[in-house]
Length: 296
Image (cartoon, rainbow, N blue to C red):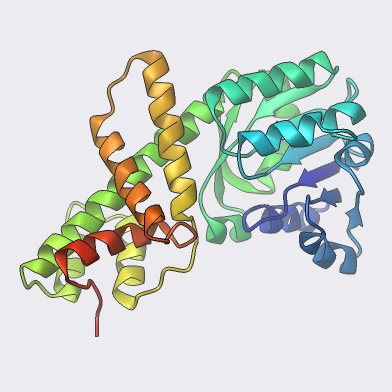
């Protein structure tokens, strides 16, 4: 039986690790804070006391942590993943980090004798629970196919985007689009409300025309209900837009709209909404325009 080590038991990582357990893999977990480990220990899932010991027990090691610094720390720290690697181990890096950080992580893993697959995911907590995240995978074809059953326990579909780094580029592509679309929707709603339009009517028009999409439908309901519980936080969207802008600078692509969207999320963070859902990008607009996009 394949043993899968899973590092990072946050809002996304926890349901992903449970899906691996439900799929019948022998799962070992590790989290940098022990609170996330407790439900797994209580359910009889193995808990490692360090990334090194998790890696030594695993055929595949999945990383789902907050950012590139966290990936580097988990890999390189004392008793880190690199200390436990051998040639039979594949590291599947699923966090959203910079392209350069992905390449650097791959080089570290290769130098330590392991294999590396770049596999960030598209989707939020709901798809993570349902096992319907979109897997955005970069890596050698043989390495990707070897871990495909692991990926398919968490993701549907799994899209092989090319070599290492292309999974990261695809994640930045889709989150760039997400941030722009969410900010445009928020601006449109506030514009309409300032002009006296009814929130329910605006939603009906959007949901019954060419602009209908799950994002606008779901976030329209959330904003109308005043529900800003984080499915994907403002802080993470800001981070991802910043990563996309940095990568665009490296390859010479101007992203003026994305830069403006990043500043809108920056404003939401500055006003204290960083840990709320990306729909909270509407709040600074409401405050400036002195209107509220809510259904009373």
